[in-house]
Image 1 (cartoon, rainbow, N blue to C red):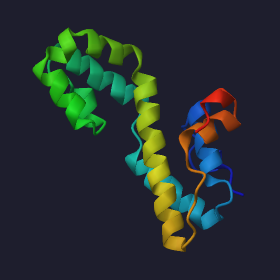
Image 2 (image 1 turned 90 degrees about the vertical axis):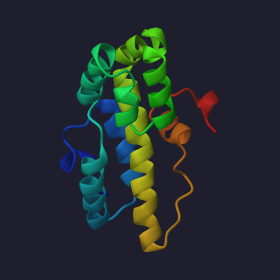
Image 3 (image 1 turned 90 degrees about the horizontal axis):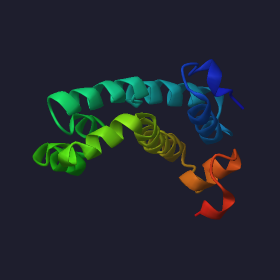
Image 4 (image 1 turned 60 degrees about the vertical axis):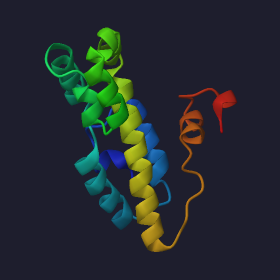
Length: 142
């Protein structure tokens, strides 16, 4: 069982717990493959904050476009960040936006790795992984 901090030391606590749950049961080779792919696609929360600041003063919705949320990006662009309220909300919630994006990316990478190995994984639901570490109350399990 590989420990994820060896491969991704830059992760904050909640993200590290989430990623550790995903890589539990993987071989060292699979964990290294995951870490390389995840590091490539992961969005740093501070960069999300920077794009939200640019979105506030210059290009509304830039942070949403950068996170791959095209619909929300165009909505912010055409409504000037939902009259700035949405953009200011994104400035406050930048870590959650990055974490949500990174969770989705991590699940996709794990699913691809396990699919290549011929092992489908059914426990990739976000709520079950978060509640395992007490980051989500058990009543939210899906």
